[in-house]
Amino acid sequence: MAASRADLMRDLHGECGPALWRYAMRLTGGDRGRAEDVVQETLLRAWRSSRVLEADRDARQAWLFTVARNLVIDDWRSSRTRLEVTTGEVPDHGGRDETDDALQTWLVAEALARLSADHRKVLVECYFLGRSVSDAAERLGIPAGTVKSRTHYALRALRLVLQEMGVVG
Image (tube, rainbow, N blue to C red; front, side, top):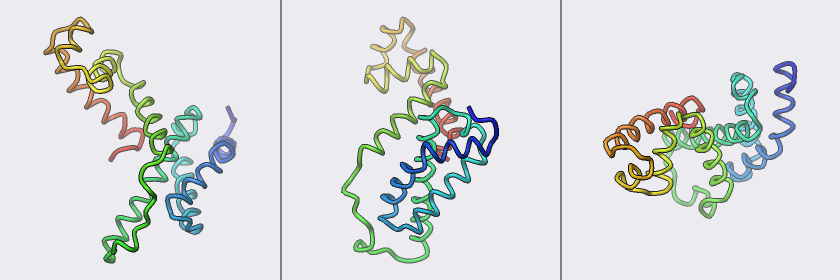
């Protein structure tokens, strides 16, 4: 791990900068100026967050990609309110790509890892494995009412974790 914040930023830029640049170029439809602004603002936000600088590589990269994506979306939303957008002006990126899926997977895995074991187990059973409350209760060896309440509180805790990570507002 680097000794100073400047060293951490140099390391961050070296390991994530090229991928972040390509991602920003794709998000901005090849607009170099906007992509440079997105990368610069993303790295500035990372500089302000020591938690991000000290996180592991995958978590840092997931955070950077999420911030870049949110910056582009926010910019698009604010420009949309200033002038009317026609369908001919909206770029078509051909749907989702693997980058968005990988980013979402990293973010969810990181957020789930921060939950308590009980909360994580009930979310995995009910949401990721698609089990009913009664099936999850049977597999976990707890009453159905406990599954329901843990699910409720686990979702609240997950939202808080995602807010801390800067993923949701």
